[in-house]
Image (cartoon, helix red, strand yellow):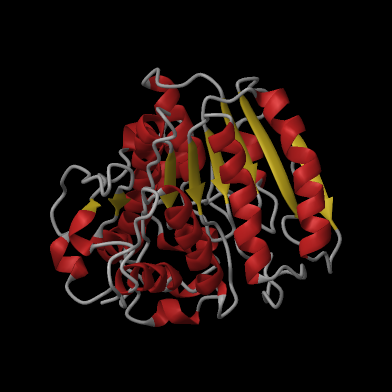
Length: 354
């Protein structure tokens, strides 16, 4: 990171509510355009999972990322024409983490339905499965890789999507197909851009798949802070696991994170940090029982990103889970704070709301 210069790569796994015209604007792949010499937005219209509307029956609101994008555009923080479109992850890149058998299983609707906990997927034909489900996850994973590359050049990459931390080498799991963070780390290492990496996983569910991928790898440190009594059961073993009891709110959560982060940085000595910033820690999430507020989530993410900036370490933010109706709002507020703090020159304000 040079002179605190910051990149924010916004990668969206969208659904049908992007801002008017934005999908057409980013229809073709192109290089990133840096706004204010600091901010790069990465997105593709092909991130959209389409099950003919049945995706709305799933516990995960896949439209939340499109809602965040729409709000970033309408409040003037992001221009649709400024986005860079990432290439999808390749089979060669996927095989850096996942097995050949796993890749073959992606042709089987019943296997993918199990990975996504979405029975309606089992009814899809091969072509619809490939085009409407697998292709969007490939694109979102390619976006995490691109955000990692650009973060190394500029400072911060925010992927609005990704954080598929339950996917294991031989199978998907828990709404996750590819483990995008693990793949991105392996790609960056293969390209000799990095040697050491740190994963800070603050999703309410343990990053069990990531822990399995990097088990025994002394150059990737996995830290997961999660609720103790929910999925996955049993837990895997990260390099450091911090378990929180149900009912934990902002004050206790932030105190524990503030206490733990210095230890994690010292132990890992990373050249890049990947943050899984799930907002299922929000009070009222139907799949968990922590009691964080929106303001608390914003401060939580800021604590990690600010710690990386102070240490001059590039950081990639992925959004992970979040299943309540207002999950998108908490994550929008966190991303907006990052743009406001690091994406604008002193004295510069966003464009007028559209």
